[in-house]
Length: 153
Image (cartoon, rainbow, N blue to C red):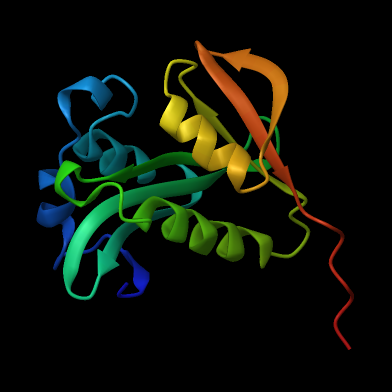
């Protein structure tokens, strides 16, 4: 499998990002990418990312710092319908986790998913996220806790 890379949504790829589509049965699970790219402009320390395999944009991810609970949240993760079931979501999730974990003082990454989205639940729980017992806006909240970072030498 060609490596998955994450690149900021920018002038050269934003149209490819907003052209990505989910299959009909998944469309209620994730906000449209156009909305998410716009929303990123108003979030703290937001990273709107094109998920690429080689030169091809296959998905989109968005994470940001939430001022209310002082935690990082993965707000969006989606793979285009033509590129699903190839391990791209898992690889992209691992890249996002590594980026957030590398930030100083960050102790966890949170996310929410619709309870009926069994594929997302399997992905997130399989990567170490744990259900928190919270439900916000109809979404199950899961959190990945990071071990304390070693002080720099």
